[in-house]
Length: 312
Image (cartoon, rainbow, N blue to C red):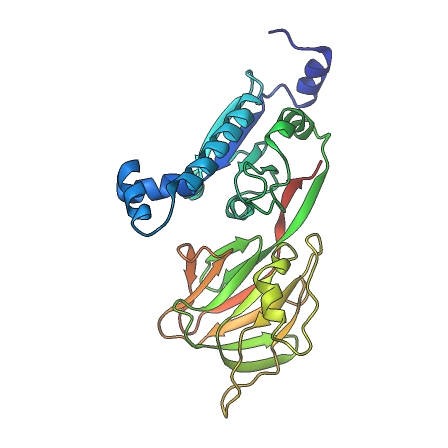
């Protein structure tokens, strides 16, 4: 198939390299329940015996498959392509010039974001009305026009701030929504917190450090417990907010440092006093965490890298 003049000009402008599109997905609810029980019939029997129906999950699965086929069919035949499931993200090698198409729920964008470094992300909602669509705000029908516009720099990119945690032993992680610091079983967490010129010893249910993207979720529910809640960022603000969950006042622990704004010049520092079970994880993925053992120091601040989300 011959290239049009516009295609030739665009390709020349990109140095002649063939674009690559990486499609990111995760197993549907239907796939997971069938995998768990071995066969569709066994899954259906298990759910029916508890007054539940497999058909609704299968209907969403079918809609997802139709949307995925539409997305994949929208990728120009001459372009390179790759598919990666959520469980494979930590082992997949993304290229700097990749265009990422996430087909699924909003959380899948957050899952992928921590492994990216400036690549453009197109979020596609395969089941409107079931997924919120804050980060996956495009339809499968939008992809055919969005892909060339994105690859050749003609689409609007919204840069969303991420949070970064760095431990003094060299470990680090990034998160798009929020970072949780506390005990892995959510029992009382003990640590020393330093913010600005203040330092305080805490016993609490842990704390979260939220970005603007995560400000409408977990962080919003926590601020409702505060008499004077701290300001929450917007998605493109380059600062974070920390929120301590249920700090306990005692002769050894305080409650003065319950929240505040974390900026590049004013990071948050935590020193663990947890012998066992101390963890730090991002975006609700507890299985991918940093061990926060007694004596380790964690510094939390806005990450230098950002999620580049395609909006139009």
